[in-house]
Length: 285
Image 1 (cartoon, rainbow, N blue to C red):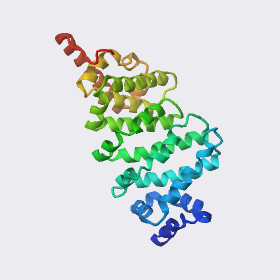
Image 2 (cartoon, one colour; image 1 turned 180 degrees about the vertical axis):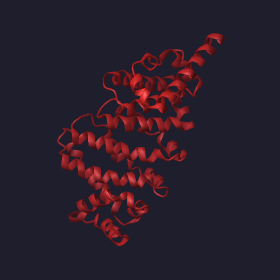
Image 3 (cartoon, rainbow, N blue to C red; image 1 turned 90 degrees about the horizontal axis):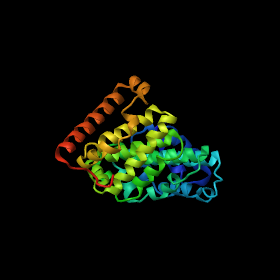
Image 4 (cartoon, rainbow, N blue to C red; image 1 turned 120 degrees about the horizontal axis):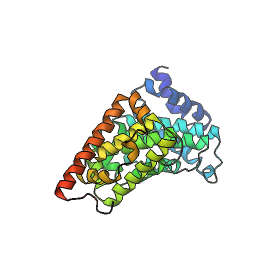
């Protein structure tokens, strides 16, 4: 595909009879063209047409009547928005245009049928593309929105793949200093996060997933960088992270084993310091 064909496919998105093919082809080859995102954003009517595709499936979300074909079509649209979210010149344009508001309904889906799982997973992929690059402006934009709470909810339901993406987003938000401060400022926010993580550890003991476990451990490790949160973890860190529950996965992944060891050492040091000072973290935990 040369640049001329690429431009023609982008233009074809504005024509309803050519749109589905154009979106499908562009989503397949989006990784081949670094400037596809600006082309999508700046071409006349393209973003509006993509939003129309998203809105078109709202009526079949509840009651859940979404077909696999409908899901695949919208997932191709969301793949193009992932492309826009990753590009340095269009990332903040997408956020300021409130495009995520159109995607939130897909993340709120509770059905675990394949068409809905695919839609939830690809929608989370748009947010993951935004936070993948270390851009403080993105995190600052997302923190006051419902994005964080939606991702916490997505960590509780759906496929392992969508839970992993949701947990990755939370981990990326935590990795930012403002994100960590936002979550640890109040006991309520910290309590919500630690409860979701604890429930995930319990679920992983029943249905293990190395990739998901790795992201959960990274979240705990980053929480331990906050003094009050680390103090609280001396009490509420799941015992299954301290015993042999996940030993087979830790043996196979030296990086995950190192992260868990760092976490345990941080928590143990906090426990010793608390005993010496008679202090505490979040009083009600």
